[in-house]
Length: 311
Image: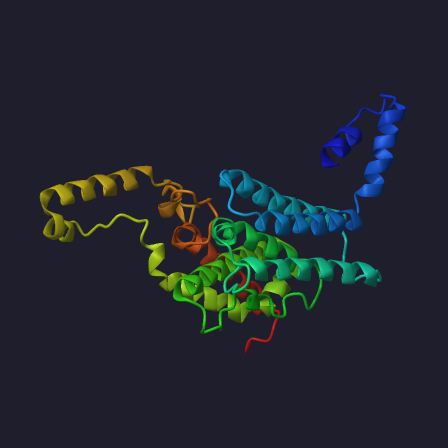
């Protein structure tokens, strides 16, 4: 739709559009709407449900690619709704209710693939929820930026942060997903309109909880080579120290020299096997932690002047 619209809008006035182009133009005007975007979102959520229910296939990469494509489609549909300048607080109450339904359908789906899932939890779902955790959180954050005042009320409950009965491994994954979600929420809030900033302000307490966890997350340090060469020498001898020096030198030689890149130290660290660049884990935290701090500080500084300082 956007590509065709771009062509039509940039056609020279001297060019006479044929009937096919005119028909395309009418279709674009009719279909480029909040309703079309919502229909796409609901269809893609159903697609996610179907994909996650497939038994473990021989070609897992194909299933994973389809899952990620659905997440990308949902992001595009939400973006389309925003481009249409849809404001859900307008007189169109039906649109508000419908988008709320789309948001809660997505959260309901997340409950089937995120731990703890005592019923129907397959290896496929566990693997999908981990590998695609960053994309899952990005979609959730984009939903939260829709202009609906109560949509964020209990969104952090999605990650079961206060459930003490969850196994430790699952608890760590959920906490890291909450951090990934918070990072995206703070990034969107900082770079978007006042409404988005106010939405983030409503969740500032939960956001800062995740920031503190991210700063104290030891796993964020694991991808970095150690600079304690004397300890390497004690543990593994001269060979271990030599390998440590090579790794450290290689890391420093690849670091981005730009002072504007807050997370430049971690930017050159490659992703772990089978992980995507946004898989919620210690590596993802280390690649985004200082930008996260800056975005939170920016939001607190800007919004603190317009809200009650005691908050």
